[in-house]
Amino acid sequence: MGRAFEYRKAAKMKRWGHMARTFTKIGKQIAVAVKTGGPEPENNPTLRAIIATAKRENMPKDNIERAIKNAMGKDQSEYKTMTYEGYGPHGVAIFVDTLTDNPTRTVGDVRSVFNKFSGNLGTMGSLAYLFDHKCVFSFKKTEGLDMDEMILDLIDYGVEDEYDEDEEEGSITIYGDPKCFGQIQKHLEENGFEVVGAEFTYIPNDLKEVTSEERESIDKMVERLEDFDDVQTVYTNMKPSEN
Picture 1 (cartoon, rainbow, N blue to C red):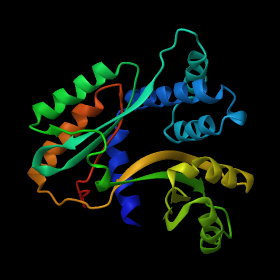
Picture 2 (picture 1 turned 180 degrees about the vertical axis):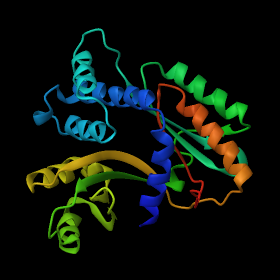
Picture 3 (picture 1 turned 45 degrees about the vertical axis):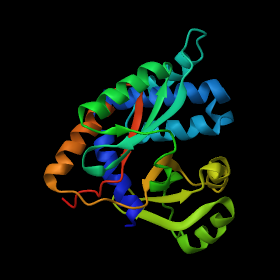
Picture 4 (picture 1 turned 180 degrees about the horizontal axis):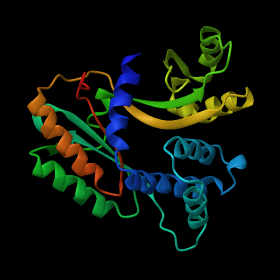
């Protein structure tokens, strides 16, 4: 497995640890997608991708349909994507991705956690050089699939030549330019691949070694940040545990 896959796998085990919280976060993503592209998945590629992710995370069909219906209501909040970045304990870089209807509240919540853990919240973009922004697609592997040939085909759609295979899940994960999200999704769907997950992510390009004690304090900080409903994902450049 590649570095990106191992990092994402380790991060996801923490990120999706609480089912109710996970559904709340996905519900916000659905709300934004519906507001932007409409409630019909067949006409809204972004919504289709989020629904695929929701199903992978075992979000009940009723919950998905309710989130779509609620997003169509006139009194629904308008969510904005806001990112916050800085350094946590032991010099570990932390990138916080949020969807919020109240940026003032959200930045206050995020700053309080950085302060509590003796961190330093920086300005937007200050740590961008430490992370690579990518779009990620996972799809079911089909019989007789030649990935070398497929990657050569997908390079024209902004996909990187690195890919990962999860034999346990029977899926392939590819990485690409975030600007090419729509055309990658369209190509996969038009060629009959079952997309089981699609997202935007930040992958550290330089992982930082930490001790077990340092890892514990950083994990506590990340968990505290993830307790906020506004927080979608927390990324760090901490090297994943080998355990």
